[in-house]
Image (spheres, rainbow, N blue to C red):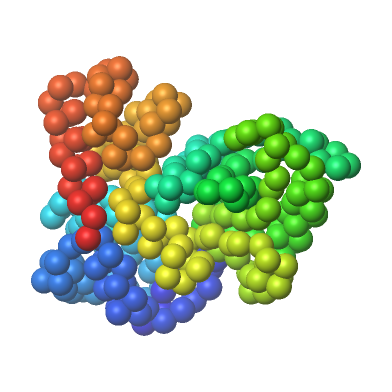
Length: 276
């Protein structure tokens, strides 16, 4: 059976691929097999992958909000746009979970010109710059021009001392992070040039998806018990991760959510943040 991807490309429907993505939600094998059977019975020749996703999401949500929230992870990261500022804060939180010190949105003077740096990270004596490339389209990819451009900025910055964490900081490493993916040429150039990359699916065993599943770094935009407007208000108030609401549940009161709904929201957060 042929299905239609977001790009308009017709591809074969792969039940095992859908099954694997459902299993990542935390649902049991038994639940996943039931959902998969229902989805297979409802799809038809030429159905869009978007509609298949909607059907699977709805069925997961009937079993547990947290399953649907995990299944919705990639789309939820895209909800950190459109400008990408919340995405930069989210990436900083990921590095903080790995024991880095972080600073965001800096203006640093290079040898030739000044540069806006999204995130600066420090572990031990090593300081690295992190540039975030946010895409609203789920089909967009960061091509080779991105790491080439970032490398030129890094080379202008790494020859000067900067006053960020201390009075004499030297930048000795460079990252490029995107919410989507990198092209093969972009990866090849970055590896050759010593630039570190992080995307939805790269590196294979330590990417944005696996970091979330391992460390419960789910953005609050995953939550199915909040409206889009409520998520925006929380993001603007400085909340980024779902588990931030466990530490500061009063943030939900401040955006006028009722006591009854707060119980449901925090219940979803608790379920979502049981890492597995």
